Image 1 (cartoon, rainbow, N blue to C red):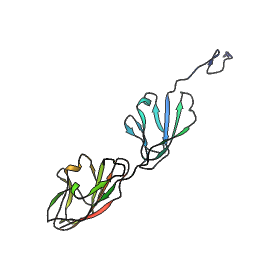
Image 2: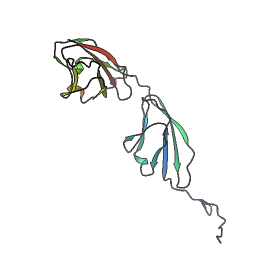
Image 3: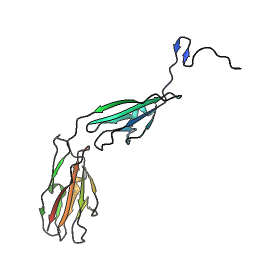
Image 4: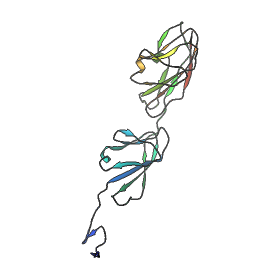
Length: 200
């Protein structure tokens, strides 16, 4: 037969015995693509899901703010029971999206033109561009194509170009006009797509 010591669990004499926290869970309730996100071990995490973090991972867990406010939650586990969820907020300045402008470009047949000479980008926050996307809506075999580092890109799809790649990105014209699109990202927000034409 077990004999009770008469001492409540978690108490030793007149001292409180503190359990070691073994796990955590974090949560991000803000699904806006321009908002922030949790990062665990360098890997960005999704929204609206409990993200498990061990005690060993806690030092490599951070929150990367984005544009505006994020609604966040956290709770901890001591090996026996989970604590209640605790809500808090991280608020960053609202990011201004870049603005792309481009005019129709008149070229000679089969002319190759640097992408950076076909459009311009402004950003009210003074942010540098982190990424670009291009699109070619003209499927004709006689039309031109985007090229990254000398590699021709397909039509009818968003073509991702990093800031490091933009200097080696060109549009190789054909013998008929092309309907082209471009947009840019400052790493938080994308500009609207901007349409222009490569006219031969």
